[in-house]
Amino acid sequence: MRFNEIINEAEARIQHAEDLVFFQGSAGANRALDSLSSMGTGGHTSATIKWDGSPAVIFGRDESGEFILTDKSGFGAKGYDGKSKSADDLEQMFLNRSGGKNRDKPGYVAFAGRMKAMFPIMEKAVPIEHRGYFKGDMLYFDTPTVQNGELAFTPNTVTYTVQADSDVGKRIIASSAAVVIHRVVDAEGAESPLTDYDIFTGSKLLVLPPVVAQTAPRVNLDKLKSLKGVIAKNGPAIDTLLNKETLVSMQVSDFAQILYAYTNSKVDSGLANIGKDFVQWLTNSKVSKKKQAKIIEYIKTHMQAFQSMWQTVQGIMEVKDDIITQMESQQTDIKASIAGKPGGEGYVLANPGGDIKLVNRSEFSKANRAIKRESNEMKAIDFIEDDSIDGDFADMKKGFDPADSDDADMDKEFKQTPMITQVGKVLDSRGNPNPVTELTSDSGKKYKITSAHAQAIKMMLTTDAVKPNIKREFTLDIQQDELLGAMSSAKSQNDMIQIFKDKYMADGGNTERRSNYT
Image (spheres, rainbow, N blue to C red):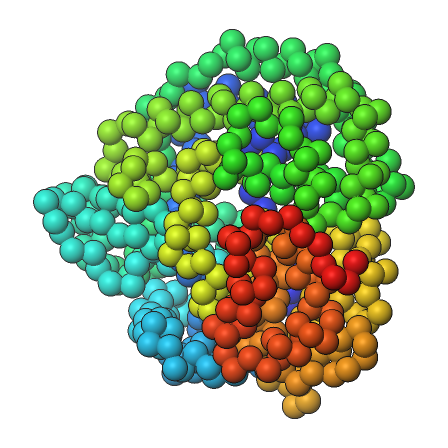
């Protein structure tokens, strides 16, 4: 299998400890509980800081030894060669996206220039004899300056402060850029964590090694014992509730992803009493009405298991968050904070059954979403890349059975192909000799659009920056001549955003409404 197939088809997802219950049932619950228990008896040394880097990059050497630096979109691009083999190629790849419109944006031009400057630095760091790729996130493009004996850098949401006289601080001072590596893809296509940090040459590119907790936290063993009792008593019923064969037969095979999406939605409203308002959330979600009815009826017949599942999830969160708070208060050479408040993205706990993510969702996730909304409420920059599409929705869509996905279920409401599919074809055809340049409304009328139009429409269809009922209304309306015509005639993405805001958010998005076409 080729490297690009590996990278695009074998993306390994690290689950939150509590989410293991949704995806692995009682076995996942016990794995989470055992892992948390071990943190107090030496297991803390297997927990490393989860770096909050940006942008995501892929770099390394192909089968012939030629160096490549790109991003995920570029590596798996269709219709153009996104595997940039020179600094100039990399810069032009970024600037040519969105039909070249980004050339008029000073911030994006500067970003392309920074990536261009990274090419020779990262190329020199990868040995000539190496074959394979590294997937990671950039942490900084310029050496942080020393202030009051500390180095600080903010690659994304989290600010990291490092003691300048520490071993890591000295390596930062000697470097020009830094990256954190998440996975390695070897010459045979197998993925694995990076274990040999000495493989890289020179000091200009700092590949940050794992940073572990220095002191074992005090784990609430009484709480874990109580949760073990819940699983011992109700584990079989929880497994029946989450039985994949049953859910497939009901055409609700994405039930675990729906539970996951609901949990992420609770970050904003509060994670206390999680599960009790699931049905209310469901009825306002993008999930089709037909599937909603199936799920609600299914829950009624498995109420005890449903309640025990959420009791377990909430209990795991409480123990995990207490552990994270203790670990982040320890005296270490590296400190993390968000908007001046102590705390970062959390930790990754190595586990034989697969790594586990330890993140305080009520702190990091909420702060992360708030900062993104405050700084960039549906600005045009959000529409630049496919990778900027809302993570929760993308995660929810992973693993969907096409036979019971929301889009498939909504096909019956459309006379033409759903717009999410149509804009996807436009974007996939970029760079082809005969690119797709039209969208078709339910009336059959065709509208000429650019890839920038398609990017904006795709983001509007998938963003979680608006309420689910608004997103569903837009999903129906964009199939019609009135809205599709207005969007396709817009001169810029900013104009498209304004059309959206005028139509759906003039009241702040608080009015419950239905599309005129339902």
